[in-house]
Length: 149
Image 1 (cartoon, rainbow, N blue to C red):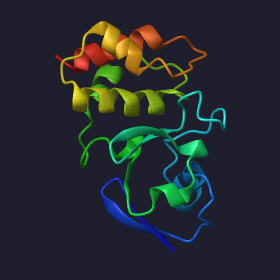
Image 2: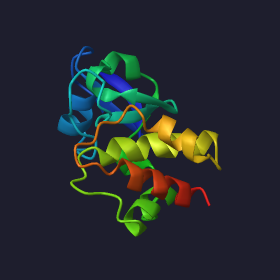
Image 3: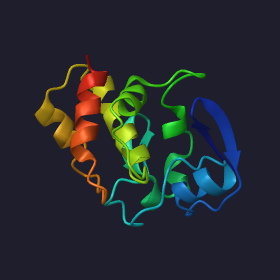
């Protein structure tokens, strides 16, 4: 049994310690907002916060999350409220297919937590690791800047 906190709630999971955190989040905990992309931690689709640090869940073993706090895209905002960056992405219609968007939202939320008023180069740098085939990066950057206002 491995214990961790996911989106503010205690969780106990029975998966093997070497199981990718992504598989546990999606398969055992039903948190499907975090996506599988490349499987090598390079594309950003699977990014979550692990103790506040942006982390690729696809290549992080469950054992690395034991006793730690994981925040997925579903846990960015409390209750029924949207996080400012989620709201801005909707208002700016920044998403297209949405596959990479959950990881981008996680990275953007982490940026705004440590730097509430980032400039455009800081936002671009924070989202640099994300691959998006639809080409929405500029719209997402615009939305993150709006969320920071």
